[in-house]
Length: 100
Ligand SMILES: Cc1cc2nc3c(=O)[nH]c(=O)nc-3n(C[C@H](O)[C@H](O)[C@H](O)COP(=O)(O)O)c2cc1C
Image 1 (cartoon, helix red, strand yellow):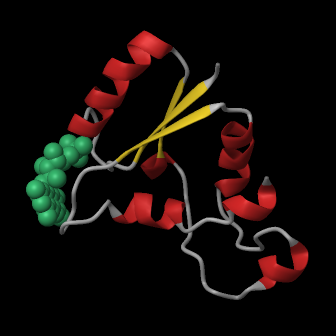
Image 2 (cartoon, rainbow, N blue to C red):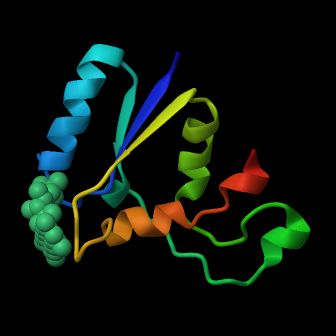
């Protein structure tokens, strides 16, 4: 089983990273921080409805392969204003349906 741990905290050595790493030390797998990538938000262009893929140019092209090679994806985020971080929110709005 291959796991991918994704941190939405922009801080280095953050609490979120620490908690994800504790789990990863048991299960193994890869760890990435969204703040190391450029992930643009969905702009509601709806091109994906026709093309079956997202046309927004960003680093999701680097992240998609990691997602689809993983059996388990673990998301971690700090609470910002009673929500996930902006980095995680942008990631969660990605075109994950059609890429599958
Ligand atoms: C901009 C900002 C907004 C925050 N909003 C909340 C909040 O709404 N509720 C809360 O309990 N903590 C809030 N916090 C505190 C963080 O969730 C907390 O410090 C967290 O441990 C940071 O995680 P990190 O070290 O992984 O970045 C906020 C922190 C920041 C910087």
